[in-house]
Image (tube, rainbow, N blue to C red):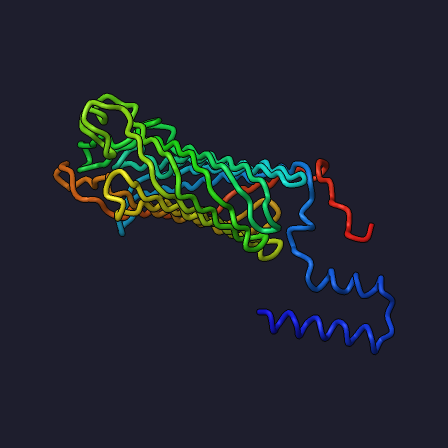
Length: 324
């Protein structure tokens, strides 16, 4: 890396000498070559988000190939952000919410998606790319969820705040590029909340039977990547890893979300989301209704529907250039 920087410096200086450019022009050329991209991030608030609504419907009558007589599904997702930056201070807030239902003649109505994810992170820059940060995260779902053993039998597996995960973390946020950042903390407190009598009495999600919460303390890493490849295609992902020092620290909890959005027309988009979760304290449900061992949870949602993107650029305060 030092050799590359030295070579670039030599080329710039050579160009200045042979081209007989002024000192001011040389400084401008130097800034374009070596300036940290984060120096150009606007100060003040950046507000915005995206809303998606997808509806699918189907009907069959005397259809020889078989299938449900009717089906309808609806899925909605709201992803918002409020980002603040001024001097050494930054405050990033994101809220992701999603909900989906599927109704068919044979199976009735079932959930296809359900998520609440609030993330707030304050940072104080100690260098151009490193912040000392505090992070808060809340995750849960809106309504009850079930595991369906057959057409007539279902087992309650979740409800609002059962489970819920509340996390407080202190660490360092390394912004590798404007699109990629890594937050790492050796000191993180997490509460697992099960605010449901039947689930709490069964000791679901690793809480002791009859209790409604469990305190954990461990290390936490969050990797975030957001990029708009062009005017029509964007991708965002977040991977959270947590190790509990107090109980089997070798078992790493995984929470990984991925959303790929492709805008076909002005307000029509194709959205693909893929979520992966692994938690050693979450037991799977066997076909007979009994608890099984932990397993990787995978959820994939593909939708084509209305998409509305909103943002507020009026609060931007562009940082002055170096030579202003």
